[in-house]
Structure formats: structure tokens, C-alpha cells
Image 1 (cartoon, one colour):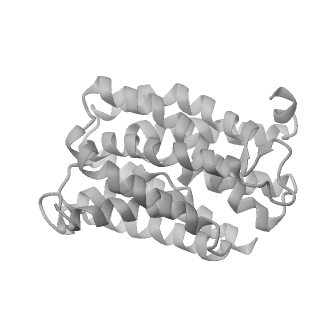
Image 2 (image 1 turned 45 degrees about the vertical axis):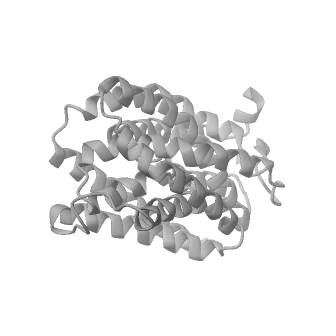
Length: 273
């Protein structure tokens, strides 16, 4: 692993480490899957080390899934200890979320890279608008049941797995559409990140490495890059999860919106290749 890390220049190592700390912070505070940070940073790092344009996105998404899974585990533990893990939401959403994730993994291999990046950025902007609207934009005051209750988590799982976003990034604003307070959604989102990211990372690792993949890649997962992102994330996430309980809802919402807007801007900048 040390030799693999040495394949990255010092600026790349520092960028990955800083991004990892940010992943732990937003994952713990907001339940946001680290993919929204990891994917844009990895796209930049892989471009800097000469990875071909068509190889950057699949390896970035596969690596991001591993980072999200590793960072989510301590975040879930932190939320469980803080009492912010809503088991009612978990029971209602997890089965459909997992099925949607499996379908999203299949779609990830056929969607053109430019379309995936545009979809990624558009989702961030839409979710920002929903978070900004708050109570003014609600579908209902309770979670839907029956067949209708399967659609939202299934779609969240599909998009999260296909784009490497992290299910918590999507589930927070979507749960808000059904009147779920942000703090309840944050704890559930951390768990959803783990549900989607762990099997996704495994499947990406089992894929054939694309042409020009970085030297530390196993399939479509760059292990050294994942370690540089995940280690600081795992250190920061539990403390951030405990802090989320003490933060006002307005502050959490503002931080969530700012993070989504920043990521949308950064992702769109990668459309030029």
C-alpha cells in the first residue's frame, strides 16, 4: 500500500487527505455520502496523474463507493450513540433502497460519462432548491405507504449507486418532502450510505480494470486513493455525528445547501474533460 500511495504526488496526497476530512465532517453532520466530495476530487487527481478521460469516471465512482462505505460505519455508530438513528425510517426504506441500488449499478455501466456528470450536478442543484424551500415544498406530512412508499427509496438507491453519490445525500432532501425533520433524516442517511456503498464497492472491484487505470486499482477501485480519503474521514465522522445533535436545524440546512452547491459547481467544471 505504501508503494501505491507513493504513485501519487504530494499535492494529490494532501488534496485527498483534506477531502477525506471534509467527507467525515459532512457525513457525520449531515448524513451526506462522501461521493459528492470524493468523485470530483478523484476526477481532478486522476486527471493530474494522466488517467485517460473515459477511465476517470468509473474508477472515481468505484473508489468513492469504498470511501463512503468506510466512512459511513463510524458515522452510523456515532449517530447510534447520540440517539439520532431513526429505526422507523430504516425499516421502511432499506429494502427498496437496496433493490434500487442493485438496478443503479447495472445502469452505471451503460450511461455515457457526460450524461452522468450532468445528472450528478443537476441533482445537487435540485436538492439545494428543495432544502432551501424547506416546509414550503412538501409532498405530504408523513412517509407514504404501500407501493408508493417503495418509489422514493428505490429511486434514491438507483441514483446513489449509479452515480456514486452516497444515498444519504439524496435521502435527506427527499425525506424532507415527506415532513421528516433534518436531524432524523441525517442519522438515517448515514445508514443508507452503508447499505448502498458496501455492495457497490465490491461489485466495482470485481469489474475489469479499464485502460489506463491508476496503478493501485483493483478492478475499478483505486485502493490507495480510497485509503487516503477514508482514513481521515473515519477519524472525523464520529465526532461530527455527535455534534449534529447540538446544531440548530437552520445551521444544518444552510451547511447542507452550501455543500451541494459547491459540489454541483465543481462537477460541472469536469465536463470539459
